[in-house]
Image 1 (spheres, chains in turn red, cyan):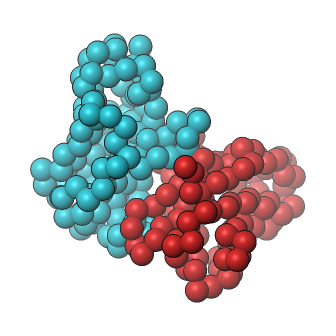
Image 2 (cartoon, rainbow over the protein chains, first blue to last red):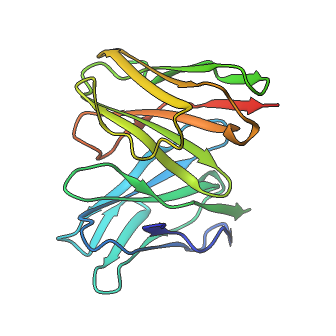
Length: 111
Length: 113
């Protein structure tokens, strides 16, 4: 049973436009959510996180939105750059315990 | 700090052979995680340790898989005997604050033929 779902395997966006990556979860006990970025032949690297007590967190070009009632979060990248092309993983944890990851979304930013 | 170090980076082995993957976590991190990445299932948590003690191994797929952490600076993941369906990228990660913001190694790409 996948508790964290990223239903879009891939996304293609033009440079300068907004990239929106989506993630849904089923476990209502999750209280902390993270996005990781992964380049080929490298390990995932932490990008941005949000606690369940917030509905938005912003860090430069990256903003994460959390909709608890819909059990949905999204990552917005504005403006998108070619260097943002990577696999993006959504992850969640409950009470500081193990991270549960989604299957990932491949983002391609075209120049 | 050099980050989480995994070895080997690539491993090709024949079915039935024993495979040992190694990990050195970031110094001072109390949590160590082993993940497996496949196309179908994404990143799956296999097992994690806190202060060298295994806390949750519910993700370990079968008895063929075992993991140890003999000290704070070293962990192994062993597969014996290996099977072609074990082919994947295996990541080790460490964290200082439970599961939040874990730092990942570069992974070991395992191919079992």
